[in-house]
Image 1 (cartoon, rainbow, N blue to C red):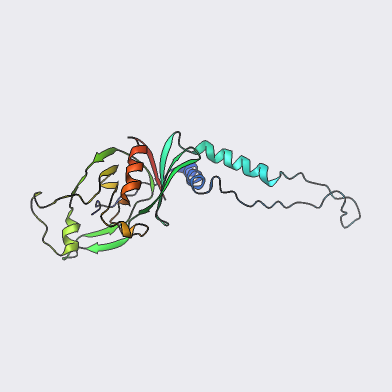
Image 2 (image 1 turned 90 degrees about the horizontal axis):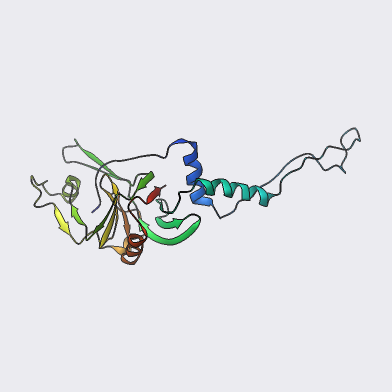
Length: 220
């Protein structure tokens, strides 16, 4: 019951990699190991004192990294989706406002009966934006939904609309991809969707309330 189509819009440039790194590790800390010549009290092979090299303490180096990453984070509120672990978080700067269990694309492939068309049910990576906020969204079933069910693809739209299957709200990310609800909350935390991001009812209500039109969404 998710949107169709293949779509991938990667983050561009080296700064994008640092942003995604910052989203994943900022605030978690890391180990820093410094190596250099022995201290001045030691002696070299000729018995002369070795020169000492000043090495910044690990905590100072970590603070510099955190400041650099923090400067690349979006201003204001944004959403981060971890496809691997099926987690969605709403953040503001380096503050985490909400963490929710979600479901992302399965990565499964479906072919039409004649083999002429193929669909890959994956959630794209990259940076997106909330383009629209929808109350009581209605699902317009794409061709693959009928192929998957072994049913003939209808010629008109009358048989395509299905009500009440996307939850109370949806956030439109463009090209048919949504953050929406589900009738199958027991499957949350698994990669089972056709590309959209599913949330449970209570988490969806909070995310819908926290998001605005234009809110950045990072999927990795």
